[in-house]
Image (cartoon, rainbow, N blue to C red; front, side, top):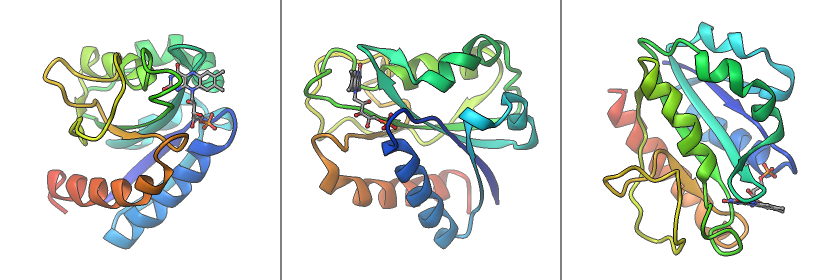
Length: 171
Ligand SMILES: Cc1cc2nc3c(=O)[nH]c(=O)nc-3n(C[C@H](O)[C@H](O)[C@H](O)COP(=O)(O)O)c2cc1C
């Protein structure tokens, strides 16, 4: 099963996570194309019916720089028929009022423009106070990672999430 994994990064954390996630997904049997949105046209997303979007949140709830560059087109993107999962990186302690805001901001156009979100993630084990990345039912809109405070949990969370999405996608 083929998935386009698109990521943005300012300081490299999300890139490393995307590369590690690609390996875990491939071990599980997925075929993964990895794209850095800094040098990939947004239209490349048209080549996949399953997408994973990985992004940090920056500057008190703002998008990562390269996603910010394309956000106007992203908000208009036709997600109909596409299944989209998110991976958010952030810092739940220093930015507890905006932890993972970006995945919430980026999940909205998917829902508004005909797409389906998969890979939502339970909120136990996090200590933030507020996030746009959390749905009204208390689930994260995607896999929630925090390499600033909980790096030792990242590998296990990724493995568990990959098992979860494999089931959701019927692999
Ligand atoms: C100035 C600054 C602002 C940040 N703002 C947020 C924020 O609002 N929400 C959040 O969850 N994390 C925030 N972070 C944490 C980063 O998202 C986190 O370090 C992330 O792993 C960086 O990913 P990257 O290296 O891929 O850019 C901020 C970090 C810095 C240095």
